[in-house]
Image (cartoon, rainbow, N blue to C red):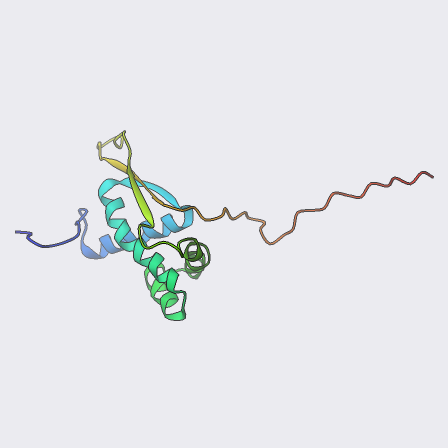
Length: 142
């Protein structure tokens, strides 16, 4: 019997389940919104929300703990620089799971959209460059 055993197995062994949730967390931090099955989305909250709590602490130890989960310094930097200040005033509830009306094609698995409740600023590829100033027109009459 499975009495008082928390968490879903998701049809995977523990190492595969841990890798799956880490990869989903990385995808969510990159794109701020992903579509997956309801069960995976609900389990993903248990991985992502503690990461946001670490981003609110914003110290070296918290960054190292986040790196243990994410495994990428750029994602840790995005987490702490973009999402940390965004949720600074909140007290939890950093993600929302919205059930989608149409099941997945093929196996009819119930789908859900998981997203952050607040959106970070969109980062453009040429963020470091300033926009080119329009060329000054020569109005002198010669």
